[in-house]
Image (cartoon, rainbow, N blue to C red; front, side):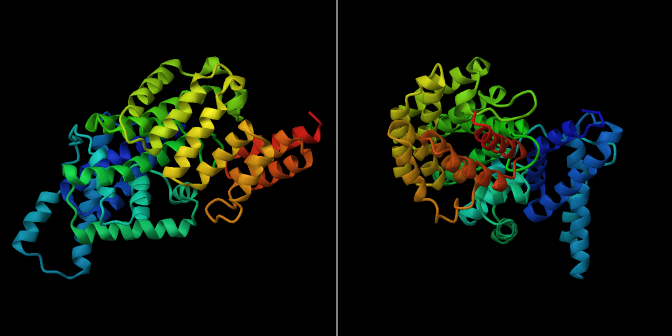
Length: 418
């Protein structure tokens, strides 16, 4: 943690950021000012810790610095407004004073789940709920969130700004929602955790295929959510999906960092403990009806996990599960995956026909995965020229370097006649 390499400090800061933000919001309210203060504290830590070493209580250090930044900003705001401080305001400001320099204490309570439910408040629009939570809880950048939503970066920035304003104007309390409201907010919370996990499992951009700190945090938070709601089948389904997917992590990257597709992975390298836990969760989750999209995705991951090799995969069952999933939660990525299953069960031509229905969908029409899947199906059909062109088109659109290199290697392999 105290090395100059930087990456360990960055991982720690990403883990602590939502906990520190939750502590400040619970203490002071004013989500907008708290988030700004936490960002400043994180920047200070990123500059100082690699040189000075990580403090004994890093979370307490961040809370202390962020609290001071919050008080400074609050006072500046009051000064700008030229308000005469009343006795009540003076008392309030005194209560907000940060701890003394040597006091780096912080409560042990982890407010991250409360923070998730705050960001999922119905006063916010669904897109703003997701964007704000990915930012505040997942620590994703605006660009990463835009990639997850398949929308322009400026759109995400506007959503986050509007969400902060809504929280401030609505006076939303920082506490777990009452039982009647919890189910509605749960849907958003699950979607957020799902997107955080996906960004960690396949990074939108950058030199690394995976960001293990994000997948680990998504799994940690989902476990906490399941402890809070042990009878929620969709929570169990999402946790199962994460565990079964993350279990493949060691097998999907070669020593040089290049991507290994599912069909070519050495399944002996899959994490058996995680797979066993995931399979047990799927079995339990499917017994709690009605079945939701995360339970179905967990079931699909379970079918892959149960296959001894790629050739043993029960594709008819996977296709049936994708058809169910598309009926209850239609989405272009679901259609994309269903097209692969259609090609495996029926013919590549049938899969290509289904892919054609996505060409005019603005959510995925320009996404590299559409071209990558099309190229794969062309290759299955024996159309080497079509596959080569598709892989090259997908590589040009990919922003993840490992994915781009993999797609380029597929095209090169076809050039070489391999």
